[in-house]
Amino acid sequence: MEFVLKHNTAEKARCACQIIFVTQTRKLSASGQRVDKANKGMLSAILKRGDMEGKSGQTLMLPSTGISGVQRILLVGCGKVDEMNERVFARIINSIATALAASGARDAEIYPADIPLKGRDLAWKVRHTVLLLSNGEYRFDSMKSGKQEARKGLRKLAVNVDKKEASAASMAISEGSAISAGMNLTRDLGNLPANVCTPTYLARQARDLASGNRRLRVNVLGEAEMKKLKMGSLLSVSAGSRQPAKLITIEYRGAAAAAQPVVLVGKGVTFDTGGISLKPGQAMDEMKFDMCGAASVFGTLKAVAQMELPINVVGIVPATENMPDGNATKPGDIVTSMSGQTIEILNTDAEGRLILCDALTYAAKFKPSCVIDIATLTGAVIVALGKVPSGVMGNNPALIRDLTKSGQQIDDRIWELPLWDDYQDQIKSNFADMANIGGRDAGTITAACFLSRFTKDYKWAHLDIAGTAWKSGDDKGATGRPVPLLTQFILNQVKQAG
Picture 1 (cartoon, rainbow, N blue to C red):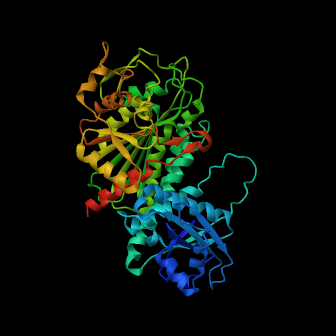
Picture 2 (picture 1 turned 90 degrees about the vertical axis):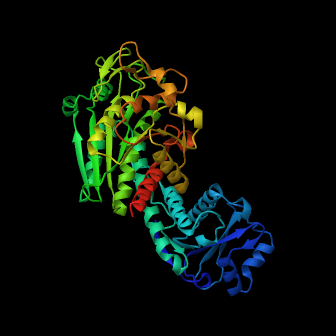
Picture 3 (picture 1 turned 30 degrees about the horizontal axis):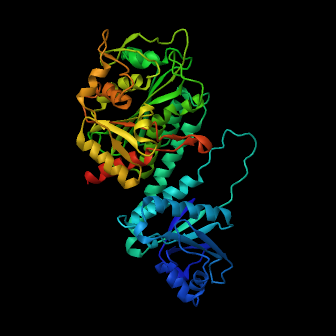
């Protein structure tokens, strides 16, 4: 979908569909009042008949209005002004998408300033309109046979704002479009089946992402090179797979070479059977989503590159399968990580931390300003937080605050769990420096405790996205989170740097 800016007054609109907002009870927005006045009370007369109360998400399409230049008007309810929040805003935009998809309109005009959302400026409304409408358009049908029917629907949306807001609105459209593009890439990679999206495939996708972009550079290490680096923990996970592991590095250089980069480390388990600690069969197909952390790194870098942000960002993706095999790692085995620390593997299904720890050690070579790892790491985070926020822990309170603020800004929220030293005792081992699991209690926290032992040399935060990276049931599929959060965080770093 194409998004363009307009500055004309509402009564002079020329479009296939003009979107007018109505609050409870039956009150037209400022733009709606201008259109109503120019057309001798046509809209207010319709409201008086009771066809539209203005409840949030309610829509009424008025075809053949007789208004010059406008083929139809879509009345959209915003609900009560004092009950408006981000959830209601999303409901309103989604209802617009549904109504427009059911119509024959190919272009439309919207007035985001008329949505009465307190605490959010016009740029926020514009960016989220772009995000919600773009994400609502997403379909994953590349694996279906035959020619897919061309989708009808909106192709261009004119975002009408006051001229003094034009610069901020234009930036909001650019940011929203870039973040949407990154989310779509993340969703595509997550939704691909594991027999297609292998570690080797991810490496190819990294090179494709960088192709033709002078700011992006890709380096891929194979298993022989990882063995030389003594990444025994990562390689212990790939030992049971016929697909060779890859360590993928994508460097985005938008600032001076000496500027410290933000480093993103994404868990890339392209399929997780649990290894010898085999998972139950129910819903195991969803373990193709166990590389959504890696996919979010790809998506964030795509968004950053599209916006050409003046910052350095490094993405590191340890990619492997976790399979049962005669060569697979066994419970009780002890491996040595790149850091030199030894790990007793009590459960081979706690494999994400085993690949991340070597990648986190590798991250130090880039002399990062901060490191953020992103992983579908524990089912325990869903028990703790459900599927609304992602979990966050780390070793630097300021970094956690910055991430939390970024999540609130972009409505991709996170919630901090305690990473107290008290929990470290749960991963003690009688035979190695640490065990890779800490028992049933506080599973999300003990997983972060494990990772914390490899991140002492820099500012670090860990995002557990097991509850937010994909949906199950009828809406099964990758969500594209936390690309909005990560991109907003990087945008904020750019602003802080001036």
